[in-house]
Image (cartoon, rainbow, N blue to C red; front, side):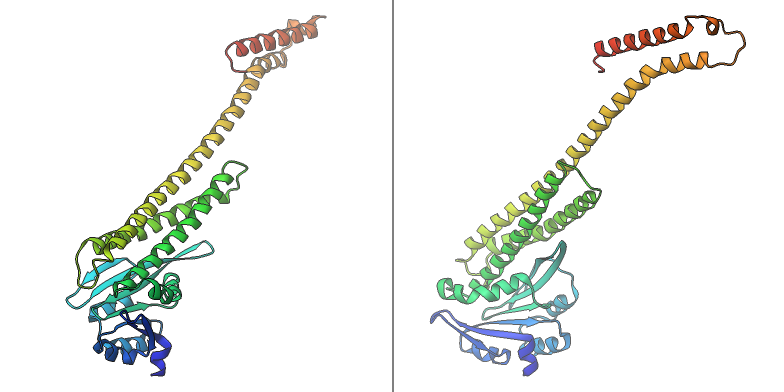
Length: 326
């Protein structure tokens, strides 16, 4: 019993009397027989103890339990005769590390069983808020389903806000002096945004199915609220695509600026090359070692050389200014 306490919590809900009662998982069957709804939350970190506890409760099909222990995070829905299985994927940001968190929710007529591996951000929010929300809003067991999705979508929104702040920071950085590390940051953020989209996209499909398809485990009164949440998820998906476009456009603009500055430098170097090319030719001619080079004997040869240099440079400058090279 102590082991069960350490890996699981259970709450009995009386919607008519607006009463919540903390119970042990072993009392869950008794509460359900007395027509009360029970939420059991199990931590799967201690796998052997968790398996024994879940098997003793006998609330979910064996394949659901295997999925919870073995599958990677991926939002999906499974329908069974006696229950509904939701695999929900939340996000956790630790610094700039982007990790996924899976929670399996098995919903029956008189129970909801949640399976998680250690603390998860959006489940922590559910535990923090559901008691107050129960007293104010709860009318049916689908209240808990709403709480799960509300916390999950808030999780997506917070992660997306953090990514938006990083996009704005990179956008500002690309408008000034840029260090080489910025390109790695752009690559990482682009990958994170794509990963967030891959997480949110199946969540929208599952939420839309819950909001539109009739089920004995989802009240019709709750479905319009779920449909509104699906709209929020759609906006998150659109914003993620916009952020990726902004990131890509900012990088392209920066590369265009670099190319423009490079072209200006090359243009100046071209002007210098054009001017000095004929002068180098003259220097090459009069630097030859032939014994007979008449101009070397001229008393005005030095002046004539510099006169030729001045005429050539002046002519080239006039021609390039008319051609708008300068």
